Structures are given as C-alpha cells and as structure tokens.
Amino acid sequence: MLDKIDLSKSMEKSDYKEWMEKMKIQFGEIQRKCRNLDIPVMILFEGFGASGKGTMINHLIRPLDPRGFRVFTTEKASEEEEMRPYFWRFFTKTPPKGKMHIYDRSWYLGAYKYDDLELDEIIQFERQFTDDGVVIIKFFLAISQQEQKRRLKRLESTPNTKWRVTKDDWKNNKNYKECMEKFDRMLVQTDVPNAPWTVVESTDRRYASCKIMSAVINRLKAAIEQKEKSKCITDLYVDGVTGDFANGVLQGVDMSLTLNHKEYEKKKKNLQNRLSLLHSKMYQDRVPLVLAFEGWDAGGKGGAIKRLTDCMDPRGYHVIPVAAPNDIERAHHYLWRFWEEFPKAGHAAIFDRTWYGRVLVERVEGFAQEDEWKRAYNEINNMEKHIAKSGAVILKFWMHIDKEEQERRFKQRQETPEKQWKITDEDWRNREKWDEYEKAVDEMIVRTSSAHAPWIIVEANSKLYARIKVLETVVDALEKALLQ
Image (cartoon, rainbow, N blue to C red):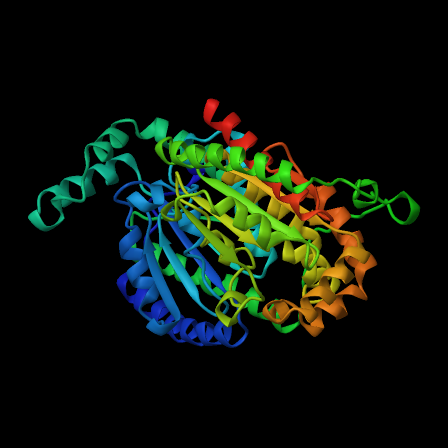
C-alpha cells in the first residue's frame, strides 16, 4: 500500500485558500447535523514520526464549535492506564452521541508489531462501535525517509521543540524501510469497509490538510444521508435451532441441593479465611478479579456478594450495582459504563447485574432492537476475552431459583417491613414473562460461556448452599490463577 503512494503531491497556496474557505463552511454545517442526528464520530491520526499529526488536527478543528469535540493524545499510557486492560483507556474516551473525538495516536500504538490474531482483536474493537452507529475515520500520514530526517533535524534545532525528538525517532528513520513494511502490513490487515484507512501524502501540508478535511466531510455526508434514511446494515447470525431443539440449560439444574446450617457455618469460615489470604496475594501479584452476578429477581445475588466481601479488604474491591442506564450512559455504547468500572491490576470488581442486560432485559422488554442484542453476544465475548488476556480472573454467576421459590420469597419480602423496599410491582410483572426470560438465559449461557469467562449456574433454592458454592468457586479459581 505505502510503496505505491506518490509522496510528492502538493497544492498551490491560492488553491489551498479557495478549497479551505469552501470546506470550512461545509464542515461547520456537518458538525451541527451530526449533533442533531446524534451521530458520534471518532477520527484517528496515525503515521510516521514528524509526519504532522498535531498540525493536521489543528487545521481540522478550526471550523468546528469547540463545545462539540475533544482531542486526546494517547501515545503514552499513564500509570493508572498501565494497570488496566489495553483497550480500557480507549473505550473510556469514546464519544457520546452527537460528539466528535479526535485521537493523536490511538489503539494502533504498536499495532505494526502485532500478529494477525491481535490485529483481528482491533478489527472487532472497531466493529462494535460502527455497528452501534459510530463513524470511524482513520488517517495514516506518510512522508519519505528524507523528509522525515529533515523535519527531525528542524525540530531538534529549536529549544522549544527539541524535546519532541527521541532516540526512537532517529532509530525508526534509520530503519525506515523496515518500519514502512510493518506499517504496510498493519494498514492492509485493518483496512475494513466499516473503518477504512485513508493514507495521506503529507510532504506538503496544504495538500494534506485539504485531503483530510475533504475525506472527513465526505464520510460524514454519507453517514448523515444514511441516518436520515434510517438505514441500518448489520451482519446477523441466523439461529437455525429453535422450538423443541433449542438448548435448554436451566431445565437440567438440580434444585433440590441444600446444606444444613452447621455445615454451612463450618465451610463458610474456612472459605472466607482462604479468600482473605487470596485477596491479599491477589493484590501483591497484581491479578485483577471480575465477578459478575446475574439471576432471577430474589435469586440471592446480594446475599452471595455479602459473604464474599465480608472477608475482603474494602480498599481492594468495588461492588457495582447496575440499574437502568442514565442519560449520559445511554448516549454512549452500551458497554461503555462497564468498561469504566473494570478493576485495575490487583483489585476486584463485583457486578450486581451486568452487561448481560443487553441480551436479557433489553431483549425481552424490547429496549434493544433485534440486530442490537443479537450482535451483542460476539461483542461481549470479545470484551471478556480481552480482559482475560490482560490477566484478569473472570467468573459469571447465574443465581437460579424456580418459579415457586421466587413467589415464596416475594411474599416474604412483602410481609417483612425491613425488606419491603426490595419488592416492586415490576418484580411481579416480570414473572409473567418467565418463559421468555428463561429462553434468553439459556441462549446467553450457551453463547457466552467460555474457558476464560465461564458461567457458573448456582442452584439457589437453598441460600446456604448457593453462598457456599459461590465462595468455593471464587476461592478455587483464585488459587489456580495465583498458582500459575
């Protein structure tokens, strides 16, 4: 790709001014349309060192309302970011609906060194946003070896800019051909229809600036036209297994399992002592822990979480109760609010309800379109795979009770003054859709249980048995991970 680019392209000053005057007016109008249509935009700038990324960003934003965009420089990770999964610092900087985020370097940092599997992970990362309506525009700024050398020398000659030139810049210039081959592979592998690359001949800054603004305007015009026509093109899986042949995970659960109080207290004490030591060891070894709790209403999530946290250092864990998304959360990709809460190395995040709301409540209640919840399985699997790859232990619990036990617990809550706050009319209404939820749970477990993020079905008709099973599962998983 790069070796076929004509880097000598240039533009006369008079032509540049004429082009820019026209495009500035258009760009301002397009920004307002994107805001009114709730179209989020991500613009990435990558390229050779000294190729002018900062200059091009400055030229691009001049016609824009500063209230509608943000610029991020992401080349160096902070200490906090280093302790998180790689994509965390980028996911948390994604734009809400109607806003534009511009990145001076991006998740492609070092991508030219990655293997095909890692590049595929980047493709999936971008795909989840474009499927959700985000416009991703990617620029790679190219200059010749000689031009790069000239610019580096000029930067070094001035005290105010000398600091911008590093030993790596000179090393890369010396190995320009090798770098170009690696960049070329990265560009070819990640040039996909939903997020294509635009290679910018950046020797002449006037030409480069006009090409970039023209490309942004054209991409956003197309997005606006598509949004106004309400077209949505997505790849849906076709589920050919239905009716009597559908997977029935919950039907085979033995709900008679129980535990007497004496045995419960004995096991609980032993497991909590072990978990307390493991939590300390987890912090020392910088192993993050993610525990996700889903289940039927009144299934015992809170009680199980309480028995876990009773023996953990409160400085090293965070319990996240998940409710319906607020206005800010709804303006972002549905996974954004969960990425915000994922733990840094050595800490634990415990979710009471999770990102699986997309394929449960949002599916059954119609809050998500069919194409949205169907593609969520793959998006969630990719997210969990990435978090596990960063070293995290991930466990997902489905707290399972039968319909009769749920009714008994609902009535008990209604009759107990200090527990009445736990029961609402919505809880009773949801029981009417039990069969629909059960179907959604079965499919969720089958499609998203993996070796690195398994689902554990907890037989929870007996609260004592359920709490011990959760404790045992967490302790066993941490002992295995810390031993490795």
